[in-house]
Image 1 (spheres, rainbow, N blue to C red):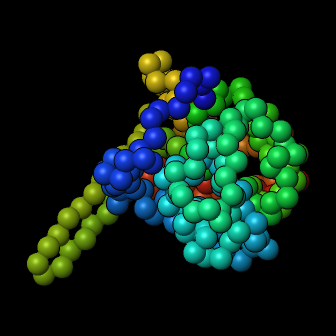
Image 2 (spheres, rainbow, N blue to C red):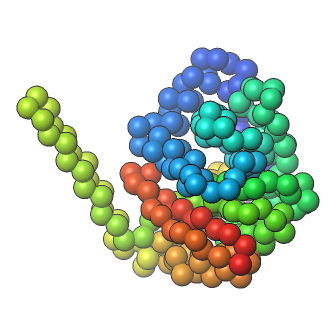
Image 3 (cartoon, rainbow, N blue to C red):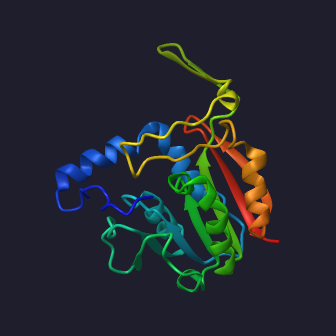
Length: 225
């Protein structure tokens, strides 16, 4: 995260918003958005705090599924539904009390924008807010193979992805992008064991861990230890 102003928002320009929607919510990412909501299935959850909602696709999914949603971001809400409350705050500055009263907190594809040494304190802040569950996801670049083949009588295609040696490399953030990723799981010094350790020291129990592809991320469903 950065003290600089966030990038310009496309909210006031319908054409720009639509272009950004199609750019970001690609075929690759749609399953990743769905999975955030899927992890809530069967849990005793009604009130959800969604951190970093972007243009609001997950917000819409949560709302459509019958959850009571509040969003939190450093930017103004980009999903203009007056019945969905929005907390405008830098995640690093907000107090735990302001995030209290929710059954679950969703913090997906957000922690990697914080410096690595700020991740554990942030997880501890979520714990102090006392939700019943916390769902977290971050990019995962450890060893993995994804191979998909589709074939019928008229068409065929295949997709292949192979990640193998990132655990030997250090993640290199883009110093010209203050809003970019500061780390990604699977790189040297940022392995799953190290991330698990931060989670547990912050007071959380790992209920389940899942991986998504082709958006390569690791998901955690957590409850207070």
